[in-house]
Image 1 (cartoon, rainbow, N blue to C red):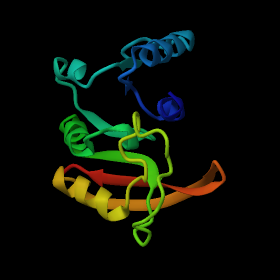
Image 2 (image 1 turned 135 degrees about the vertical axis):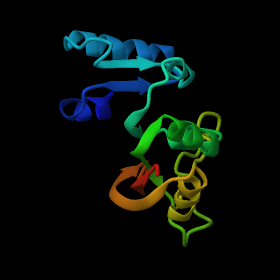
Image 3 (image 1 turned 90 degrees about the vertical axis):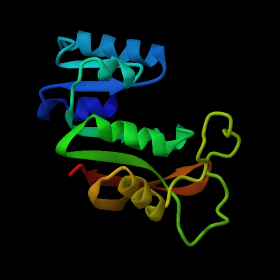
Length: 162
């Protein structure tokens, strides 16, 4: 919801997707409390719910969720299906340093809910995006933070659907 709220002033419609029914309820309640109609801002708990609407988007943003997906390949392809030609996929998540192949898991102890505990390298994200047919791929480490005393970097990767 934080990314949606930041984007809201710049777009006509926002559709959030979360597998947690409770998070979908919270998202929709917050949108309603702001006086927004469902056609302006709403959440669903599956991309399949959007398939029946045959709706395509100008941008898809996935923030701090990729490391939870068992198959980022499938998710990337699914997100690209919902983009208009010329639209952008933007993914922000945990960066893994390519030179440190032995890097300890950033999310150690959370393997039961975090599929990619070390984050993603630039090469991995470029391969995912290229494999989904995206072009003009940009990968940028944009900030860092500390988690349990360890330095963690974050990236933003973008690609355009031809």
